[in-house]
Image (tube, rainbow, N blue to C red; front, top):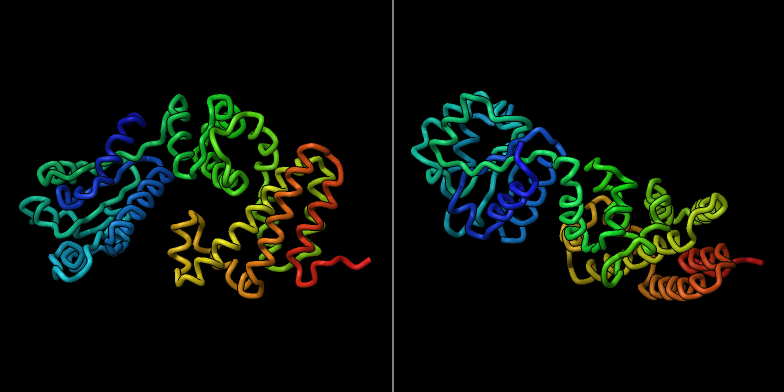
Length: 339
């Protein structure tokens, strides 16, 4: 198993702008499905940003004809294309196709072979002969969890100080999927935080983050299920959840709505917005029917209320439910509650 630092070094090389031209045959291998998927998605996002097209094949159906299609020179007027083959060594034809190549330079423009586990012995010699660039996607050792956390924080534009990093890992352990999920939720809650996040800022959110309530509140608002959203907020407060953590979810909901609304007005596709806002495409799609029914003024008013509530609740901790209800009422078609 390679170290995480070695993985980081190899990944940075693979992300260099000219790398696919210098090393057109890339192999991702390793025993961690999470790391394989993370690496594949990181490379895909990078290639798309560089103007490359992207095509995915399954190894079991990757025959000689598809190999030729994926590795043949295209017209200079067409965008460059990267083809990735998942579980590549399950292909019955791949070994013979590789043997017929003089070198990896015969591949135009680029091919990525992905495989869970070690490379089968019969392929190792061929890949070495061809000069393949091999990136080992192994799970970081427990003592490398801080390095992994630091990397993923950068991806989500979060910055933890040492105290917050220790507190976070005490809560999540070294489970990579859990670290990723919790960071995704934190990015929703702490969006716009300036400077390093310390323990005092992080601590109120940790218990809240262990549940999927952050996404449930967001989902109910997008569905305009306002009575259910109000009941959920009351239930969270009644069981002792931090009002500031809940407020952060409402604030981020308003920001996302404004960002997606502005992006759609500027002609951006849901896929474009997904990349720009670092949100799953399904989340962006869920917002579309919702934001089309409202003007930006509604979301801005609700966001202003969030800011006012944040100032008040940080100084005087009472009236939490009233403030949260007011924000939801602001989002409703008739924002004024009936007496």
